[in-house]
Image (tube, rainbow, N blue to C red):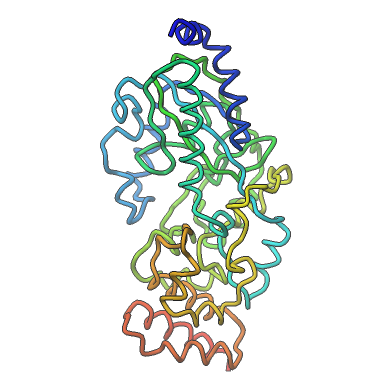
Length: 358
């Protein structure tokens, strides 16, 4: 116990050890921030007031707990943020898939196993390692599991800056990484925040298929393909369906064409490797999956969260944007009388697009 107390009294030394342990656990970087998120709270309030969150009502719940960590976890003094790279294959391969209307594009983060469990288990392992060194201490682990402003916290912790697309960018690693947090009562030294290095670049704004980045650092989620294909439970507005192209789960364009991602490195985490050939999947094949096949092929995947009905909705839109072939028309016609009104509506839209090509 005396040794543990000595380690707490040497916070800089303890933090150096934590960085080493984090690397051993497969994280690429950690940073430490205080709990003052006043600026981020103001930006969140403006974003919500503009209605940019759409149907994501959870963003407005919990009062100020999202932006005031000590209200979410009383006693919190510091937040340790960990970064783990996830890019499973080259960006050139991803761009080539976007250009092939026969294939389905799945956001790179969802090609492998669901990252939540992996990061959570690694962060808990990190907490146990700290506990072995200093004794019992207060902490809670978060990986998209509570009202946490993870990007604002990571920015304060020096892991990068929030770019014009509202994603976090690291000057040495781009933006293809996951974040997880340890809220703790340890009085660790804090890291310096990173300055923005977007400059006059507008690549992410220019390339967004639906114009969702309405101004630098302002994202209207209601226009974002990730929101439309994942968060939205109802019909996808017709005005955005053509722009969705072959993207059936999420969208990566603002990252694929960000100049800073020339520094991105491929992940060697086996859990992030593509599963069930989702990185080369054919739209016709995916639309033919019955629910049992879909459940089998999405087991342990983040894709599970949208459910089978929305999966078919999304693939139907992508098929409507594909070239007219007998195979495409046939697979759409098989679901024309779907019991799901949502699916049937999007199938009718897709078939109408092919009628226009005749």
